[in-house]
Image 1 (cartoon, one colour):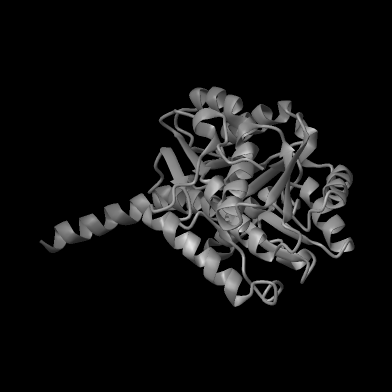
Image 2 (cartoon, helix red, strand yellow):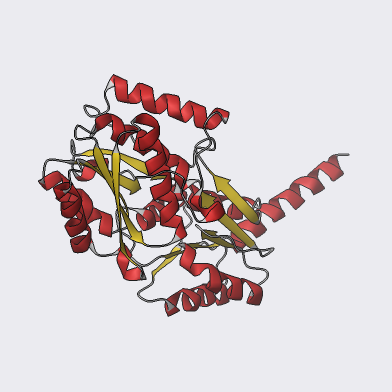
Length: 332
């Protein structure tokens, strides 16, 4: 019996060592850069957390153009990196191709679904998180007019907008919601100047709360709102601290958790492929509350948004998902 136990322990040790030897995580950022204060930076923070806890370093690459997605994926896979996390729906075609070429490599794509046996697809119920910040916006608005600035005009961002309008209208049916997209190319994610121009135009139309779901472009939106003494709403990462007292809240999208989990699961031999959906119930999306917006989130506001959150979790409120039929029933 002792010999059997020792054998099992040795086998377990070898298994853990094998996982450790194969554990060479890598992260590829989307356009907009690692320090966009938003989507990419959230992924970076998740990877950093893993490194701090494990001592295992990760490789990273910031793409500068569309072609580099596939090039970076293939380079990391060739070098033996795994798991490889890539941020952004635009990487779907590249993942589809490269994951087929490297069936033993583990891949993770965030914000898209790729049906391959070695790919984990992490998608978020952005509409649910946006609904929550819509409730907050409606409660905080003094003019009765709020607005939304999207980045690239794609269904993913329309889903943010739809959820936001839903939360606003559920709270104040008479509210007006202005919506604008920044553009229809990837450049729309990294144009703070244009984001600021759009925000100013919306404020000229009466908006006093602006939600930006636009990557780096949103930095310009938040700046313009703060400069005009209006309120902005951040996205993906907690952006409350960019303009303390002027950022009402941030729609937290836990890309950091998705990245951290991918690296850790790979190291622990627990990596699974398939679709991983993260919504309010799973803690994948939420609103941000900290010392920077504590005075803005009054008891009345917090009561309303917590009630909405509970209703989403219980299923009492079902937030429309734009991706299901490419349409939004809520009218601005």
